[in-house]
Length: 484
Image 1 (cartoon, rainbow, N blue to C red):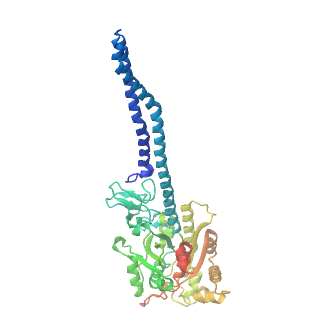
Image 2: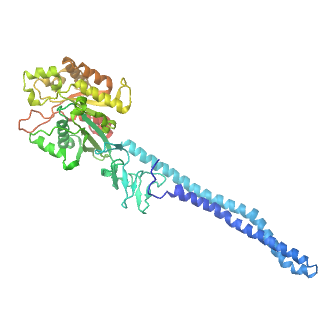
Image 3: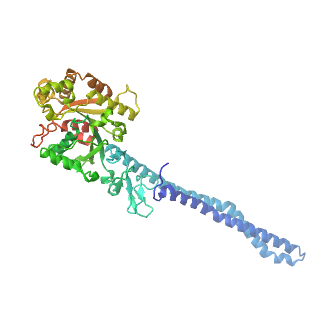
């Protein structure tokens, strides 16, 4: 059942019909009163006339003249009010109703235009919100009047077309065209404040991977790179949405550490942690991006992980899968002969186990069959490309050497082929087969989130934006226009 709004119904949906009823009732109620009085007058005068004639004298004829006159008057008025006046009232009422309905018709056309314009604007600009606190996804926040009344459906409707009158008497705009975004807004689920009145396109991209695979480093270094270069390279304005839950803002703290050569703390949260920032072209609707971090242990059922409890996965627009190449046993052994593996702090969880847990979770969330393909995009990011020899196998040098051209499609195709060959070479067929058979589209990338092992020198990322933009361009129409 929809919650009743703390507002007055629009004249077109209530007051107008009341006026029509008043016109009709007012036109005929007076006739009814006159007919009633005429009937009583006729009865009274008729009785007087009869009484006079019963006196049986000639003077009764002359004394009955006034009674005859009044009797005739009442009778004439009765006939007139019963037949002629109702016809006159009927045509007057029809005239008035026609004017009112013409006015309503014009207003209804205007009403429909405003509704369609509001819906089309929201659809074209993909207006929506992802709450970082409760993980809910919603299209319309709750708007708060200055009196404290909460309006859960502040849009053109039965309470008003362009404006709605709150019970306190204040007029509230019902569309983004006339200022709805200027009102105080909150999440309808957990009442967290919603910035900019919900006037934004919101894209949620969880970053998943096993323990110590490098998710937190990837997220923070990607954001640092975007903050530094997105405007100069693409004209995209970066604005970080501060999230100081518990008095601690991870991006502010970790970006400071990474820029000085110190690693961030290991993520222990078993609940999605939202890093939110806007990345908006000039003149476009705000594009709010949520990169979500979570403890890698969540994907290990032997460690008590409960991935199914993550509501944010249900509303995710795409996923970034972080793959630590050192979690591949055969490759890790090979690297150990030329480098100190411990310095790279590799992940120990098997890739096929992690992906299988993730796939099953999504299938349960969306209630689809085990054999069905998941309708989502996944950027598979192989990190730690600074490991000696890895670039030659699947990095930029390998792609340039093997790609038939520098066309983006050829580069992506070559990159996928090289990465698939890499995983199969090191006996990760199950991982590759699972990805290719379960997701609508996947694209492999290689990057180095840190650039080198921790040695006290500032970390410098490489190629971290490419997988991010590959996904965002698929979702955001305005961003895809400026990044070719």
